[in-house]
Length: 479
Image (cartoon, rainbow, N blue to C red; front, side, top):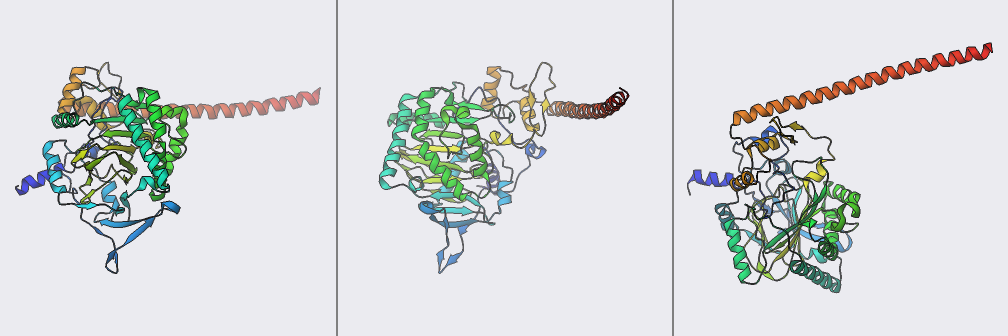
């Protein structure tokens, strides 16, 4: 490979995407970020695809370990350190990672040289911020062998029952199911295994952080079946939440837990999983070997969890930036900052069931005040408003993905205007910004006028009260 080709490949590896095999009509458009001008730049970014990792400080020639947790959850972790500070990782803007066979094959080839981790390990930044934890047997921590065996069997049976009794509605126009995925599904079906992904979550439509929350995706269908599954697997969520509360030092768990409980069973309905739960989303994956991606819709500081069930070989979770494969087996737990770390599942054989818990970023954004902007679409007859400049541009241009672009044109639902004139889009953006700023200024003037009127009314009222009291006193004296 030439140096220019290698550089181009490294740039590709810096992307930000999420393999998602379902599309929902209630999610109007992809989020392209928080809407800053920098997010729309196409400039090449420095190569951060692979970070050097090394064991932490050594004592008597042995890698240093770190104890985390309390009571029965107290666990010793091997420490590995990356050569990046946390600011470079969590505040970086990452481009989308193209979901192509070339990119996936490149990562799979690189992964062959990675260490395979089989014991409890923590990966940290150079300034000591944890990026990921592999907790060997983490789902059984604090349980007796009999309790652990019973609960593991309970979850596996609940997932098998879900596979048997639940058939999610799939969008037949889903353009993100690539040809290699279709081939994979056919191969698994020949072996008698299922290939599927089900989303159960409570969240908000992308690009509408200030709209109402609702039960999303497949969770809206077959509620009694979903409710039974959620009840049978609630113990998993309890274990995950307890672990996050012990490792998190950034405030995510506290806010996530409080927010989850503030919604409660009345709001979360059949997705509610008890007083210790903290995550609002759960993906159930049957033999999904996802390609390299980041979870772009996660809360940036969130801890995403994965745990697996059933009989399989391979299926390691690969973290290419850390240069490792994690040999996760049933009962093991992985916690990681999935928005910052590229990750994917390696080759596998058998029947691998995976539960992924996460929290949608839009649920958190409504606690951060009003949107940065609220741009009205200036196209005649369109009433859409956009919460960021990037969403406005996408509304004008249409989806970036070619297949989704074609599907959007065919559906004709009016979500996009399909413009390709960049100058015209920028002109409309300027017009929308001017209208928004005029509206903000008008609202401020109206508020100031109302406040002045209130002050004047209050002053006049006070003077009238004083005059009435004087007159009443005089009348009283004269009477």
